[in-house]
Length: 256
Length: 308
Image 1 (cartoon, each protein chain N blue to C red):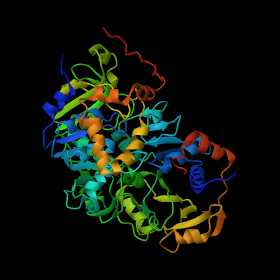
Image 2 (cartoon, rainbow over the protein chains, first blue to last red):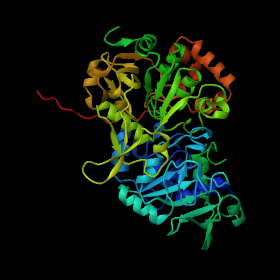
Image 3 (cartoon, chains in turn yellow, cyan):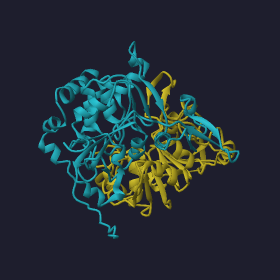
Image 4 (cartoon, rainbow over the protein chains, first blue to last red):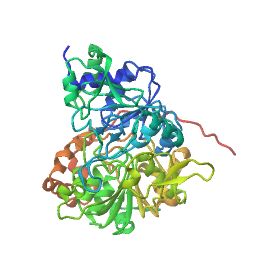
């Protein structure tokens, strides 16, 4: 069965959630990946939405992360103060799933501006909850498309901290600051799956079917680390594609 | 009219003044579009608009020229893309010789904490956010503070005390005792932090309805100055149990707002030339409105017990 690059990316991201328990769902692509995971590899996944929901069971794909379907049938609807203070800052979130406009090799994320902050070329949405999710979720997953503009040597603004300048520095700063998070652990793109090595830098571990290393290198601003055991991501199954196309995104909002 | 019940026109005319800091809160859910449109119609000026997610309503208000400053934590059209009118007031290539919008930016937890400090009469709120980010440099009001009990440092945000907070809700009584269900956002905190509170409701109910379910009361009449009854007043956002988000509107707003001329035409047709929300609902038409009604999913009821 044929599939698009976006569909492969969403399916690969959903599979990464296998075995996870509590996931904080970010705006955009994470929303569909996480909802697919709940219907496939992680049926016990507790979805946390920053709008103030714990244990969401959305009956339809929420267009926004504040959709009424995340409330009906949820375990708890709480104030946003409670959500951020007691669920996130308290350390109860296993995975924070974020999107990004720019990312660097250490998984530091920019969602604030392109260009200078005081006189931006492009004004982006800003942090929302991403800054604190990146600090307190035990692991951070990122889903985003690869391009020279997004995988950059130097991000224009650090909205959400990743592995800072490297794993060792990041670990000592996290300890000193009382962070619950251990930083980014996976980045899923339209070309492959990246994990972070012992130095805190991302490493390509899996290439999606149809993508080449040339594609990867031409859409990234630094010389990327490639795993010596590089694998090919298994194609989406018929059931995964059916869920994406018929149940989650029949309008093709995320997959076009 | 009994108690604090008044018209939208009078509530905005009496309680919102030029130069005020105004918070219309409600996270995706219960966004006070009717109140925002009335502020536009009355041509209020020089407002500082505070809101976690400015959403389409602040894009409209800022395009109408009511604001000089924006305090926020996430600037976008949720599920769709950017807020183009606001971007045109921020990005120098679009601002040109015009007056840029002043911005003061936090994260969501920072904004919620600002309202919480404001509501609780505290000089700041400590949170474990902002470490190793550029936000404290971009906004000098986010400051590092050392714990008086250990060597730990955290970040402080200052209280936010709006002159006026506007809340949309499912129901209230005439005294302003207000009940909300569904996403609660930061409405309680934003209301308690404010000098004046306007509550806009889908339904005015008897005091006995409120008293039958006190756990659902989010805002007490004690802090409410005006109650406005305005069914569909949150459209195109939604009201849990009453109507769905009109996603088509959010999608349509993108092309409308990309062009300043089409945006101003929209404001003329849907705000300035209408005298209020009833006319807006008429203009939307029965078919569109009816399509937004959800099915039913009632809560179970609990027994509070009668203790005599």
